[in-house]
Length: 87
Image (cartoon, rainbow, N blue to C red; front, top):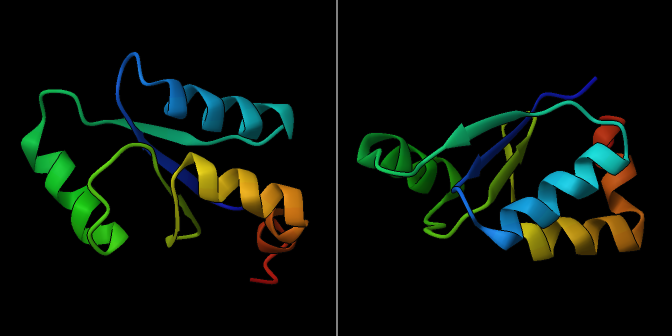
């Protein structure tokens, strides 16, 4: 099972959409909240290569991007390949 991490914020509809997609696929993930935590937010920005918006999603430490990028990977079939370790 891949290690999936998602940096998120409360009341973020894009975060909810990404988490719902992952849950729909039966995937476990670690949610890391950034609200009111500038140190964690800065770590997210550094890990993602400059991504300042939430969500920022990582699969096995590989930055995926946000909700739109996750949805595009799912639609293209690439998400399953990444999850199987083929990315």
